[in-house]
Length: 528
Image 1 (cartoon, one colour):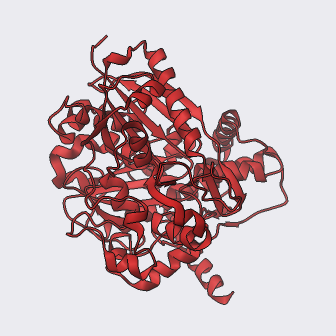
Image 2: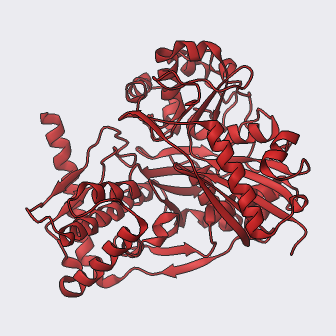
């Protein structure tokens, strides 16, 4: 076994995952520990950051054991996480973000939509920061949530002394450093990394957050991804089962780490990187497009400078509920129940059986708009609602399979809608690099190729997101001269699937109907 190893940590919506990797990008051990979510209201979702830290530590220790690794072998560590908001007092103790008043619920989860009104208020300012947020502020970004917190929980705001994106919280917990990643600040806090000064004081004052930099202990300058932020403190090293010689790098938002893992290999050819789209697909889906110049795209977040790779611009689209939508439909249908992995497999297998007889025309009068949790891209409408057209009285398992199939079609068409929007802004996307939970869903993986007309590449990495964070860890540890060099050296390649050209006529019809349904929904909404 190599004498030098790297630890990567990826904190998602429901679990913390850790991996032990070599400097060549090989995954030696992986472990996952669950985390709780508190839902006191339909639009509220909260985490306990201390529980998240405990889950991270448990996952790291277990991954080290599986890998047969020793603490002194680990040279670098990197954290990614969802763009959830952690609030602490001046002494670093948890502060409640919950209407229940419990301090243990100190983290607003990324998918929380309590700040819809505040997001709309940001949009009405017309400030130029919106040009670097897709033209529309999402309630999933931090500024609207901070506005909500200040107005609705003034005691928490008064006592606050530190506020973090979750990835930066984990770096602080590990090292004591208040450094903040360029990924998190640029994408979620209206920090304009390409300008000086990067913080737009007039915007913060307009939305009532003139005291934000002081209350959140925010730095004047963000730290580039992969830069060294500190070594593990003795207490963190003890918690994680590592040593104080372990160096920590500035991390990323979780989906961005996945993009780094699958697109980092193209960093040596930025001129053609805009042909490639990263699709990080799980509970929700994120699409990441990189380019050498800024390409503002309405309804698509960004352009963000240096948010994944140094000197490269990022546009980020997404679908707020994809895997979560399929789970929801299984729970909703009378033939469904608990959306276990086996249930998804059983449905996929039955879909393939039904298609042997009906082909791609299976349930082709059933149509879905998948915006059950709003449309993040390219419409940028958090108030958008899902639509199902073509239901009958059927309630057996096959009717569930038909609905599941057509919902999968709609999810893939939603990706096509995003990439076609990007292509109008100068991209030439013809290749999708897919990672995340959807790679285990044969129905979706087929549709991502056939319904978009793109070549689909499934990363050969066992976990592309952990690979991205290992690239960060290797850079911080000094194993490579730069993040670019780490990406090229550690990339794992992938398996390609070309689109089935015989399926094109069916999906062209489906896409035309998809666009027409969007138009009809807009008309109905204006009538309401």
